Amino acid sequence: MPEQSSGVAVAFADARLVAAKDLRVEWRSRVVLSQLVPFAILVLVLFGFALDPDRTVLERATPGLFWLAVLFSTVLALQRAFSVESADGVTDALRLSGLDPAGIFLGKAAGIAVQLLLLQVVLLAGVSLFYGATPHGPVLMVSTCLAATVGLASVGSIYGVLSAGLRVRDSLLPLLLLPILAPVLIAATQAFTAAYERTSGEGWRWFALLGVFACLYLAIGIFAFDQLLEES
Image (cartoon, rainbow, N blue to C red; front, side, top):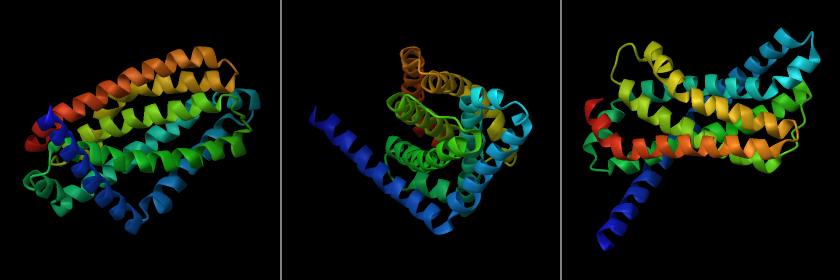
């Protein structure tokens, strides 16, 4: 038991180091503010133009449009983050650093999750402003955002490091991500739909499914990241 506790403590300590490093890099580059946020807002505006003739349809489609914007922004963020790390040799440095692979995975997932949560705050304000949609289940929505972010960040970290060393990673990463993230996207959209339509009871069932997938992806990353890092 003491050895297990020590191993967990080391993993979390390494995770804090990796997450702090990734967040410092993003803070200095301002990519989230200068690229991801404008891109996500532009996606919402384009969706609005496409469905604006029928305002009812636009309001009804708000949950799906919100999560599509999050998904597109996630892919863009992951492509940028791992291409920079691959070009600068960061992946090789992490492999040789002696840090716990599970800690590296958790740190990278945490860094991605922080960026996605900030982006979701902006997008929630955007759909309220552009689409006039008013949520009625704040607890369900916050819980859904947290669980979905865990799933997105976990899968993104797994496939990001897996495709980092490939020349075709820019086109391969979306093809790898989208099928795996489909359950997350569907469950999050249905939970948001329930929150917007005042049927939170049904939404919590979708949240439970979302939580299962998020925990599954997180567990896979923790136990498989060592091998993935060696093969990247």
